[in-house]
Amino acid sequence: MEIRQLKSFRTVANFLSFNKAAVKLNYAQSSISAQIQALEEDLGVQLFDRLGKRIQLTETGTLLLQYANKILDLVDETQSTLTGDLEPLGSLTVRIPESFGVHRLPAVLKAFHAKFPNVELNFITCALEGLAKDLRKGVTDLAFLLAEGISAPDLEVETLGFESVVLVAGPDHPLSAKRSVHTRDLARQTILLSRVDCSYRKPFEQILKHEEVDKFNKVEFNSVEVIKHSVMAGFGISILPEIAVAEEVRQRKLVILPWSEGAIEVAVLMIWFRDRWISPTLRAFMDVTRKLIKQP
Image (cartoon, rainbow, N blue to C red; front, top):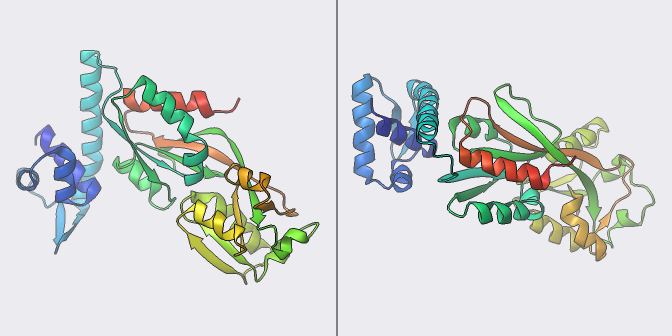
């Protein structure tokens, strides 16, 4: 069992694709396939189920992936320590909510790139589903959430600050004329919800459920900008981070509804896998983020 075989195995397991792994590692696909075959023969187990053009990890493959992550992290840590190579290099993959990416992240990117221009940064729009799994597998190095919290014993969670989430409508929407909007007033309304800003919608949906508001027209989007423009055009109402709508509210294109529940406060969470080695590159990105975003 060789280190390069484990690296290839982990990459194939993360992508569930021999072709994508070959591109990532700059190998021919045949070389990746040969390495995986040799690893399976050496261990005497099957690591992947081949399902036509698709592959998936076997139970044994899933177990090996956990050990491969630990072994490869230890290899990286050992090499970095012995050579004294503590300069951030390589790449990072980070999952972010769209609102965080638009309104908080640019300052971090500018400062980080100025100090470490050779680090490759890859950002994935955040969805709560699968987040913990991807952090454990190493598909994602770091994640951010706008949420009340996240429960996973093997994840480290650091609160960087808080954001207010508000109920908004277009200025001509009937609810905009009310002096106070009660949760029951949302019944039979069209409510636009985001899939890409992660979990701040959960407390909102819990409030609706508690007030037994279950008859409304829910429309989901993969873009906060699409939601904002739809609401401005008079199509429904939405729940969004106040920072994401501040400019539109200032221009009177959107109105923050006087909801009797008030604004929902959610935490800005930075999350990583507890058992994974924090490389100099990841540590540097986390430190820059803390410096520019963390509230006192």
